[in-house]
Amino acid sequence: MKNFLPVFFLLVVFISGCSKKDQGCSPVTPASEEPQILAYANANGITAVKHNSGIYYEVIEPGYGTTPAMNSNVYITYTAKLLNGYQFDQSANADSTGWPLGSLIEGFQVGLPLIKKGGRIKLFIPSSLAYSCNGKGATIPPNSVLYFDITLVDVTQGCKPMAVRLEEPQIKAYATANSITAVKDSSGIYYQVIDSGSGLTPTLTSKVSVTYTGKFLNGVVFDQSANAATSTFTLGTLIKGWQIGLPLIKKGGRIKLIVPSALGYGCNGAGASIPPNAVLSFDITLADVQ
Image 1 (cartoon, rainbow, N blue to C red):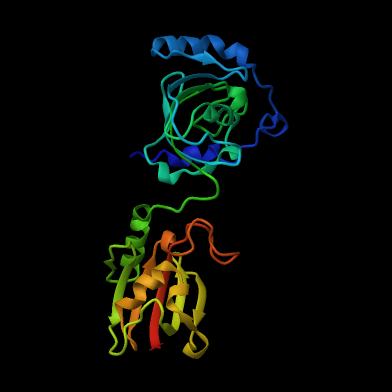
Image 2 (cartoon, rainbow, N blue to C red):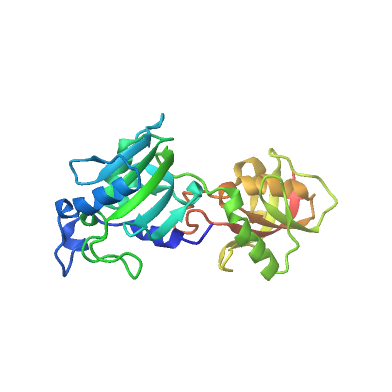
């Protein structure tokens, strides 16, 4: 897939108020853009219906699940074009979306609730309901009508964990850069056993005493303990990555774990210390198992 996603990220956190998005220029009316919308629709066999907001749309598949609301997270695949046919964005990967509907451009806020989860819609968004008379960078000129072909793959409340496979490239790059001979577990964690140990193998009900260092993949240490006496936990109460990784060694062993975010703190993160969707690297010595 081509790298169009960063452009679409510009749609996120777009505030709909004209006082902010139209600074220094005067937006054109949706009515003035109707002729070019209808011409494009007719030329491309799109049966466009006009919404009272000014968008035009064609529902290809109404869907069968949840209708998105402003506080819903929407997971979509899409193609985005200008009316001259230039494709300025696309994504075939819904897992990389998942944005609150209320943070997207007004045309999306109006258009996506016209279908349900599993549905597909074609949207013509007048410029005043998108990037208006300012445009967006070099990609979207001022007063650009935008055309989207969108499939609404999922609708959720709250966040949705990042798919493990999407984090594999950064995990592999980190392992290579740090000379970690990483083996992939079927769960999705990557690990390197430095010392297999010789004592008990922990189970989820075991109390494990550990020393450890925890890092983000940018090398920043977010947590560490050099004192196993003060770092004793029941394994089953720890993050999933530890529940999977520590039984790969025995008492006295040492392991390096690279934990995908879904097996760490997920899409919520943990307070101010661990952001959402953070892959975590741990160097752990299993000092005791009880």
